[in-house]
Length: 206
Ligand code: ATP
Ligand code: MG
Image (cartoon, rainbow, N blue to C red; front, side, top):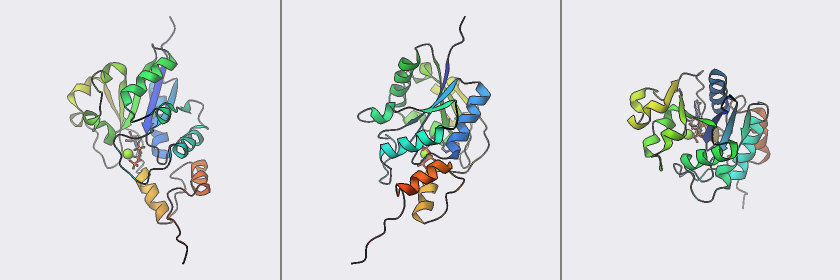
């Protein structure tokens, strides 16, 4: 009998993508022997009301660039292409359709995001659609009591190497003209500077 295809799904705003995201996905892929991991940048994130969110096409390009050097990784534009708000459930269903209905999905999420799962919309059949891989993240406690009881049976808690990196901090550093070297892949760093993303706007003298 053929082995079921196993697919990791790493969702995020990726504003911008950084080494914290990449290490989380790679450790889960390796430890659980996943066939591949898809990085899915969100279109219009339902949880974020941030006016400094880069255009979807920039977040998409940075995700493509960052995942290119890992043969197991690729980027998916399902959420970017979808009109309106994106919900994890719809994304998993769509990915299952394109990868084959028998594909086993592992949704990778950080300790902060998994603790908010009960605030997500359309969660009724989520536990049937995927297994949730909740990874540790500096600054957030990863314990089963933090997870909605409805999802405890389908959630694994996994300790990964601690990288205290966040997109919020990277954007702040860029606004302040500080280095972001080694926090993001070099290709992403170059893309950010080339496209003047997140940096303080220079106002022309009158
Ligand atoms: P922001 O600060 O803008 O919220 P972020 O760094 O949290 O950005 P997201 O795109 O919001 O990045 O996160 C996508 C997923 O990656 C989430 O599940 C989040 O918990 C997880 N994640 C982000 N950074 C890390 C990290 N350093 N270690 C482990 N998981 C992380
Ligand atoms: Mg976040």
